[in-house]
Image (cartoon, rainbow, N blue to C red):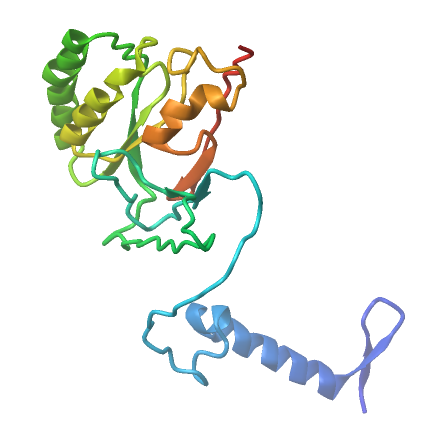
Length: 233
């Protein structure tokens, strides 16, 4: 038997050394897919089928049940054109409710995507809401068309209104006409100023657009939306 020093003070069997070297060479020759999934030859891939999962998350004082839209899936949109990744918690008489988030898988990858930021529209009357529809909507439509097949979403990044929150529906009509899902961020002019607490100050905003804090994924990017306005009454 021939033995060799492995430079660590131990001796290895020549036969064991050759066997190990042969296995290592064979591993290097394996297809990449087999190395990544060594059970592939033993367990043929099955076709995916839907699975119904039931569960509960119990907590108090939460106004919404929400989800972080994963990469590779279309952003759910409400009838008003804004992104809908939440459901208001409105239990029935038995303190129960059922929520289903229907997600649609994208046809291609969303690694390459774009988003448009709508900064400070600050519409304060019907005329300015109409200007938003007449002037901004066509600009956005033209820009989106020029991006081709790149996935696009929008972000209304605050001060959607100028203190007059009754015009939120006009903004919703405008973004619906733009044809892309829009996320919203609350601004200091989007508050209920008669409120006495920070939470109550966003009641109207949340009634239209949902949670003040949420996140979503597009490709390899994780977007986080924060409420950075503190209303002290």
